[in-house]
Length: 573
Image 1 (cartoon, one colour):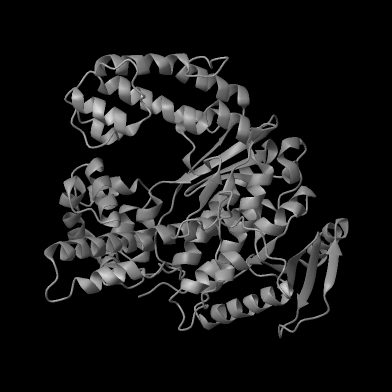
Image 2 (cartoon, rainbow, N blue to C red):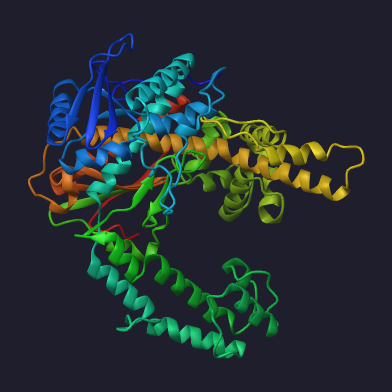
């Protein structure tokens, strides 16, 4: 029996039901239009400069409307700079991507080039494009888009699209709030970590001492004192000359080879990544006033996962986590979910046997206890192989065992894979759908069905179909996990807003200088910066939010999503 459909409940819906459209109309102007129950357009209010800030602050305090906006990135930073926080929005740009592709309704949004995020010529990320203020009536354009989005949302009688759009819009606000508040960062600790790992930073530039030592050792073993190690082609050619016949310089391939050059080469590559991704140049560019302020892109991945457009927030290396340090009088609440995606698969498929394996413990240990495999390592390989469509190696060998023990879960991902291979689309729990195959894919499959087709074409078509099947197999799992995380974030944010102001100020946190706030998010992990006296209340908020996210997605289905939660001074693990 299916779990009850989720419903949209507070705080995702404005208590007053008031909806106000805010349109950036250029030249420092913002036009506000209040929408009544029938969506009729009322008189427009044109706001400029400080009047815009004051009006929004007063309206938010008195009425707490749902603000209909084109994009949080377009309008929210100005409000945050004045410490004006919005409770709820409908983000038209973020919701358009969902409602355009969803197969949850018979008639989704019509595709429109005006609502596809584009990167400008300077290479800035999607969603940073400049708003076209030359349109005849930008307010009317936004209103028309909102009405169309409402049509699609209301056509879904389950309420799932409404919940997804509300959570996605909250994510848009949070992305800007986390940038404004920043992640507390100790520059001296970061510098010390770099010196310990790389050696002293050369005063005139160049390679740090310890890194240079590894480079010299590699060149010695390769017999080329002038070799440019960062040139993949030249390095690969040099490896071949000494009998290291690898196809790439990836860590997993090199680690399988026994040769004196391997150890120093892997060490050099590790340090080179650290220097390039998070070295002194990164520190200078991205950390200011004791805060790391990355640029998040909500929904930046097709599955709904977030991406990062600057600072590499979603690739924060473990070695640097000691630099994440709370301000005096404050603490960090660090929480993450172990094996979030396998747990989502168990609940999505309503596989009670797999849910039992996840109950109150490490899911992989539960898989071992079920008798499916012998060791935790085998369980991990098997489960990941099931979600990503592995057919070779240890994963491919172990996946068939899962089919015997967890038939419902395996059937769900197998069906998703078959749908993708056949050119169909699949959807997450709340209705985010995979994009359809492009014309090139369709042409390749069509050509392979011709009577006199070349066998090579058939092989390429089959490989392409299998690749799409692996994509759709994982889409439903990763996308549902992203939805769980979005609701978790929105519920944490709502609960933190109920806490009183702090006694000790954290000035660098901008609009959150006196309030507990989300400071970092990475798929299945959050870091909160919290006044010390509110640590327990904030931790409880994180746990409550996780329970609500699970219930909203899966109703009464018995799936455990346990948190590893710590209250600490640094994020070191």
